[in-house]
Image (cartoon, helix red, strand yellow):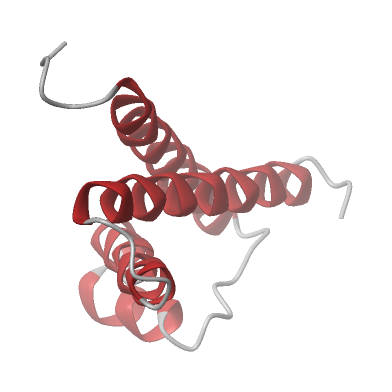
Length: 108
């Protein structure tokens, strides 16, 4: 690992990548199976315009500025901001992926 980047930042990046991939994959599977309809005011139009995969990716990308705005209000350093931003988006993506899986298997 790079000596200039703290371990917790690398963990946040990993959480973001894994969470984002899980969210996009499970959303794609849920929508393509017919068991799920994107009801987000942002996600629905993006999916309609850009297709299922790219619309889902764009929808998930919009979560990042939300976390950034929240962390900036508490005036943290930029590196810490990036860590919170990535970790927060990753956690929310994992929650969304879990919801998609429960929906897909019929538990919701």
